[in-house]
Length: 137
Image (cartoon, rainbow, N blue to C red; front, side):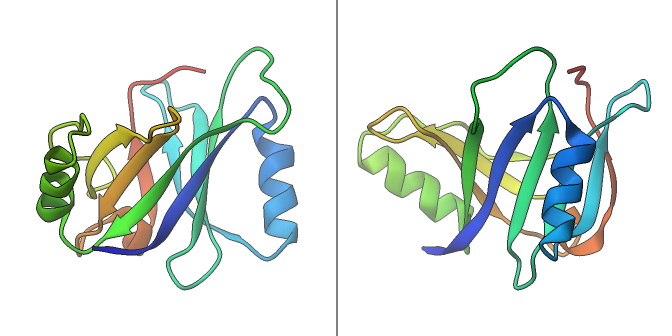
């Protein structure tokens, strides 16, 4: 069912410094998020072998080391969702994200927010580009 860790999402007040840090470690930008005002608000950084860190710009202070969620790649999103429901775990409906990736989400027993992703041939994780979303930090 789960094939790998898909990404970890880090919220940051300093998107440039955070990007520079991970690029300095060998990552390369795969695609970016821009809001409807064309402001750069985040990006996916690629580490090879379908491993990513998602950076999301926030306003205001956050506690040090703020990880918003992590995502697991699955090979069958419908099966993964059914398994969670059969375990009694509340899970969202399947949705195709702006990045052309199928997704459901839930919380683990500790309250950790988890996304499950099934990539498509058009997923931006594979194609790159700009993903426009209605979000302002």
